[in-house]
Image (cartoon, rainbow, N blue to C red; front, side, top):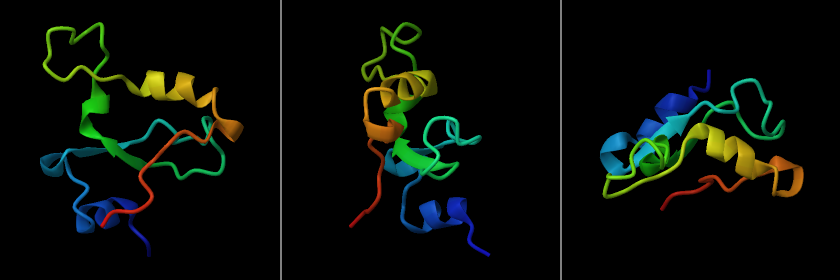
Length: 83
């Protein structure tokens, strides 16, 4: 059976390599054509307000959810291929 987390590890999409697995679409409530889990840059774990002193402020899953509304069918950019 396909294991999406194992596949991301196989591809090197781990926190050690600057990625994290996001489950913001776990109920398919952001985009019904995207998987429950997807890999995103690890910097996207923090909210800018909570980590304004961080050298790499990012955004939260909620920011991803909100920004999806500006894309066709809520299809926000995700990693689909890695060399």
